[in-house]
Length: 284
Image (cartoon, rainbow, N blue to C red; front, top):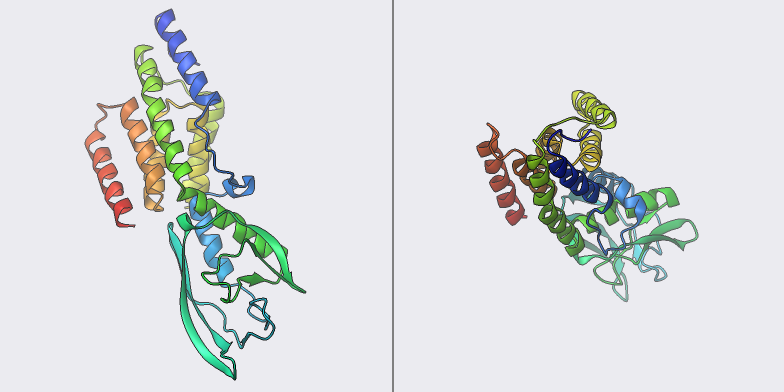
């Protein structure tokens, strides 16, 4: 399935492709495996949904007897690719009586550690370690361990997305890619997709028709991992990721596309997309 051409060029390309497939850049971050099964956009939607499912019925929510009462459901939930926030309202023990309070809690993923789940009261499950800004703040609790675990997995995915390890991994992948592209060019730039990648492309197109962009991204990503010199796979993944606000990965895939086909008719618009996504990242 490799490009036809001089034996030496074909050998160089085969070795470069093998290295890209079998020795991808690895992160030192101990991100839980379950988190990496989600796309970042899936994680974002999961966090938003489960914040609205937080069970506020536990009067001892803070872990301090009767410290809080009449906790209201979380309001004004806002989730982005860099942080999440919500409005916390209820009544808090002031020493002599319970006084109403209202506070916006904001958490930035890059400031958080990876979390697990624990039982924190007789019938409630929460995160471990807790992510409250202050130890007296009400904990995020759910009535089932499944809810708490799904939230933890989604949160860990976005913590990884904002981590220095993720940035270093992306830089390493991009730094290694010119050698793969150069070997492909020297071997004739012939595109012969393996049947497995062709099937992934068909699946991605089917998911696109259903507007299931997360699954389409997954299939394109699987395809370029199997066959890194697939220009359309990089290009399509980049466009979808850009639409979903996954700017770092969108930029990387579009740069890899341009390394493969620098003289493509859409090279200038592709470069303009990169500039736009870089500007969006700076604004985050």
